[in-house]
Length: 238
Image (tube, rainbow, N blue to C red):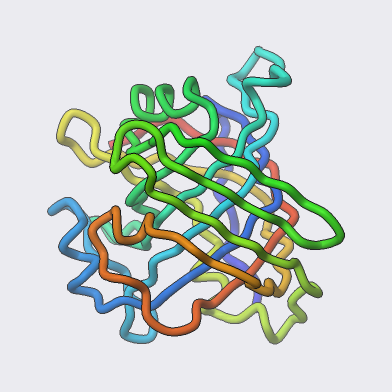
């Protein structure tokens, strides 16, 4: 099954590269997730469930148009906690329950510029021989000490029949939502199709899900991995 097509972001306000990505997803009852959303958004279920994704990765080459990437500032670990939603116009996208970044300027910029719930955290991403070790300890704002420790291995690429509707539902997302001055805003994100691989989770020790207001995840998570994609982020629209 072919992935949905990415939009074209003709006037990007940010360039990124999302690298060494691991997608970890759990099922939740829709009403559990809906309780954490603004009134302007509804949970987008799949197979009767809401899905919550924990996505640790390495952010690289972060820059604004016309400015080169800076070695220290432009590369840092990030871990996002997200779910999938629709607005009143039927547009689908991502709602972030939290975002942890390993650079204070990135966390401040995400909160101030995009009104996203960024946190400054002590983080690391270490990769060796097809395995990646993610570490995250939240600093500010709290709850201080909220953590996400993941040890994951990247496996073989998904074959065609494994790139099914659920895999695309969880990963092929090209719009993010936020509240700006109390109004729902949306920004488009352009990137090529994810080169998706199987992921092997050796260890997951986290409480970011609980810190966001959800109960402990139940059952074995669904996991994918990707070496990454280049990204163009558009400006807010209403």
